[in-house]
Amino acid sequence: MSRSADSQQGSHGKWTLSSSEDESDDRGTSSTSASKVIASGGPAQYPCSDARKESYKRKSNPLKFEENPHEKPSPAKKPKMDREDSGWGVSSSDDESKPKKTVKSEKDRTFYKVEAPKLQKENRRIPDAHDKYRTSSDAQDSWDVLQAGEPFRFYLTKVTGIKPKYNTGALHIKDILSPLFGTLVSSVQFNYCIDVPWLVKQYPEEFRNKPLLIVHGEKRESKTRLHEAAHPYENIQLCQARLDMAFGTHHTKMMLLLYEEGLRVVIHTSNLIHDDWYQKTQGIWLSPLYPRLPEGSSSLAGESLTNFRADLVAYLSSYNSPSLKEWIDIIKQHDLSETRVYLVGSTPGRYQGNDKEKWGHFRLRKILREKCSPIAGMESWPVIGQFSSIGSMGSDQSKWLHSEFSESMKTLGKAVKTLLHSENPLQLIYPSVDNVRTSLEGYPAGGSLPYAIQTAQKQPWLHTYFHKWKAETSGRSRAMPHIKTYMRVSPDYSELMWFLVTSANLSKAAWGSLEKNGTQLFIRSYELGVLFLPSAFDLPSGTFRVKMNIYSNSEESTEPTFPVPNDLPPERYTAKDRPWVWNIPYVNAPDSHGNIWCPS
Image (cartoon, one colour):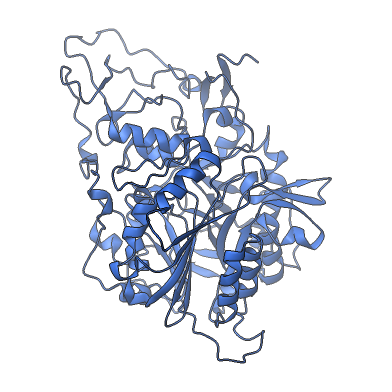
C-alpha cells in the first residue's frame, strides 16, 4: 500500500490518505510533543493533542469561506455525483455543485466574504484573552442546583450561548469550587490537559492559596512546561502518573475536595482548560458531602453498599504515589456510606486472574454480572455508546468491538447467559461533519474530536454503527460532546438498565484488550467513571425511567427519572453523513462563524 496517496472505498465514501506515516493503532488522542502549558495568563497554549493545537490555531487565525464575485456560475447542468464517492477524499466535492471560492485569512479584506448561515448567528465572537476567565452565571443558587440533581447527582456543565433555562440545572467549575459547597482545606485535581493559571482562577480568591495537588501524565518537554506553569504558585504540588505503556494517557478527570466540614469527590469529563467549560457538552458526578468518621471507628465503617470507598482507595493505590497515600488516609477517615454509584476505572498494566476483573471493560462486566437483575426480554435491549474519540478497532467488528467489548456491555447478571452473537443492536453516537460545522464553536469544535484519517480509513465497517449527536432534551445539540456515556436501553427507549458516565472513549487503550488467549487484559491508560444501577437507588421497577426533557419539572412519575443528556432514540447517519475526522480539510461549506477548516 502506497504511503503517499492511499485510498479506500467504503460505505461512507472514498478517503484519501496523504500522510507519510501511519499512526499506531492504539495511539488514541495523545500527542505529548504538541502539549504546551504556559505560565502566563494570556491566550492559552495548552493544546495537549495535534487536533487541539489545530483548533486553537484556527480560532486565533480563522480562514473565511469566500467566493469570487467576478466568477459567474456555469449554466451547465449540475453534475451527478456518486454517493459512494462523496466521502473523505481531501479534494472531493460535496453532492451539490458549489461556487468557486478563494481561501484567505480573515486578515485579508480584499475578497468578498460570505455571511454565515442565519441559524448559526449566536456567539460568533471568539473570546479574547480576558474572556477566558469569565464564567457563565445566573441568579440560581448553586445549592438549589445540587438539590435538583438528587438522587442521581449527575449534572451537565454550563454552556455559553444556549437558552438560560438549559443552564438552570448545570454547573460550572466555579460552582463546584464555591464556598457554598464547603470551606476548602486542600484539594487534588486529576486530569489530562491542564492550564494552571486558568485553574487557579477558578478557585474562589479565599481558597487560591490552599494546598493543591495536580496529578498529570506529562513527560519530557511538556512536563517541564507544566512545572514552569506551576512554579509561581507555592501551594501547588505536582504528581506524575506513571505511564509505562506506549501511547497511554492519564485521561482520568477527578477532584478530591477536603473541607472543614467533610470530603467531596467529583468525577467528570472536562479538561482543566477554558474551552472545555465554555461551549461543550460535559458530564459531572458530584458526591454527597462525606462527614468525618468518629475517632476509633471500625475500618469497615463508612463503606457504601456499592463498595465505592474501597474501590476508590484501590484506584488511588495503583498510582503508587506517596502524595496520594496521604489522600488515601483522608478518604479512610470519612463516611462514604451514602454513595450510590459504582466506580469503573482503568489503570495501565497487564492483568490476569482475579486482577483482570478490577479494571476496564472487565470491571464493568463483573458489576453487571453480580449486581444486575435481568427481566424477561432484556437480551434484546440495545446498548448505546457515545464518545468523543475513537481508537483502532481492527479490520472488522469481530476483532474487539463485537467480541470482548460487546460481551461486557451486554452482560445481564448471573442467571442469563450472554449472547455473544445476538441480534442485540449496538448504537454508537459520534458527531458528523455537519454536527461540527453547525455547532456553537464551528469547525474548531472538532479539535476535541480527534478521530484521525489514518485510523478512520482502516475501519469503514465501524461507521455503519454511527448516529448523529442530537441533544434537544438538554438544549445542547450545538454544544459538541466531550462527555462519554454508555447505557443499556429498552427497545422503546423509555427505560434504562444502567448508565455509565466516564472519561473512557471507544478505544482498546481505555477499556483494555485481551491477550494470551483471553487470559490477560492489557490496558494502556488511566480512566475513571461512575456506573448508575437501579438496584442502588431502591427502585422497585428494576429500571430507570428516562426523563424526556431533563430540565422540565412537569413530567409526572412515582419514581425519579434519569436525565440522559442526548435525545433517544439516536438518529442514524444518512448516506450523505460522514464522521468528523479532524486532519482533513472542509472547504465546501462555511461553519457557524463563516469559516472553513484547513488543518496544516
